[in-house]
Image: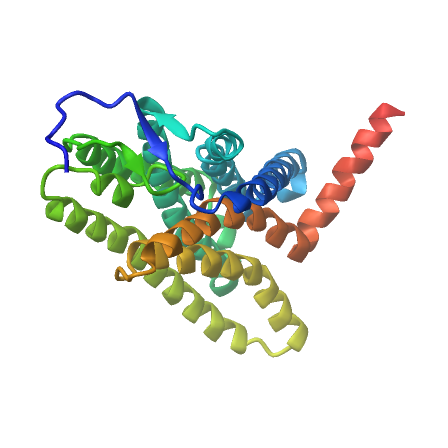
Length: 313
């Protein structure tokens, strides 16, 4: 290992999938299409939710926040990945790496909390239907959304600061396609045990605690639904939660696998694939899951399209 370099590196080399060059063009095509679908799908949900008065409810307010978050999430990583897949010189500037690290941490933690908030909204809607409008008033919705974003970005300020303060040893090569804390810790010239412990603590705090609250919410929801006499009523109640449960399973399954899974001989490539799903595929699937399974969103989208065509005529 080289001696400690006191200067800040100008750039990092991102190896990505350079050890498998035959994969780069197919991955470029897949990532580009996924990114376009993510942008179109999430922008559609945001526009439909804001422009259709029938969707001005807490559920779609939080869904709009999730779509905005997914847009920022993919934009913080995918454009740089596309550039590196297309180029022979696969680098990222130091400033770009720090910005990517900050946004990836902030938005990931924000989504953890936001999904728990969305489960609380579903709990109130099904278990306290008569008091729903009183409990989930506009001010509380704004406070819950703000708490999600503030907690996520506060976590990122702390972890990012601790990470970038570490002295780094050259060569500045990251065996990944994006700047993440575990990858950057490997370049450090000092003992990173404390940083790894802090990362594990934050991962538990932002993954297991919200996930526990989600489980508690859905346990109460399941009990309430089973008490409904009509099969149609039970199906409708489960239908309002189905999309959220799928998104929770996709997000938390990959996130826990990435941050809380013990290291293994294959963890390097496994980490890359999990990060791909966590940061690219899941944000693309979220709008598809909500639109394909949600009758209200589909009808609102049809009304929006009809309105656009009527204006053109």
